[in-house]
Length: 206
Image 1 (cartoon, helix red, strand yellow):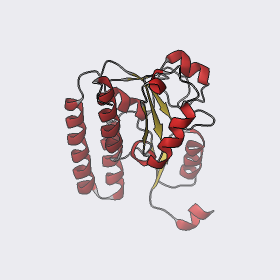
Image 2 (image 1 turned 180 degrees about the vertical axis):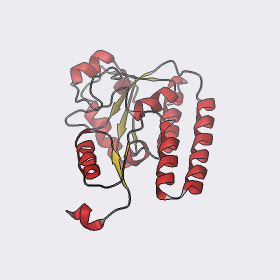
Image 3 (image 1 turned 90 degrees about the horizontal axis):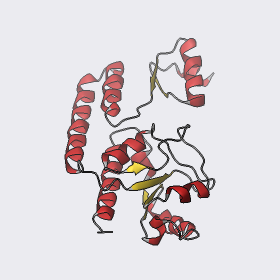
């Protein structure tokens, strides 16, 4: 009822779960709905151009997309050599422990950095996992989505499992959620931070 009252010219939705169900209902009500779900870093500029076209701001959208593509190209050139294919756990949530699979765009960030997501083969896009399954995959690096002030708490949490190489070598890091969990130009900010940390680990600088 609220959406109907607001009469939006354009609704942007995410192609997943209940969000998709809501988008279909809104489309059935006659609204213009753009459903988006980028899985790779190259999908982001396409989304920008699509939304800019629908919003009547193609010129601005093209400029933003071009700038994004240029920066992505620079990052690919900088981190084009695999960083020893380091196994990485990307932690979305701590309790219950939740990660992302290979279809999520964050995994494409990890691939950009020349490393691998240890749960890339998980069937669901954001699976809950057990500590036993993490130990079995032996991540060398743990990257958690969270604020900088949470890093101490996250590191302390993982100290309970010193068998993990990431814990033994203190390779546990936090990345601002808004940098990597939002499928916008900001994801390259997160990608640069993640690649820098993984590069340093590979070359024993961290």
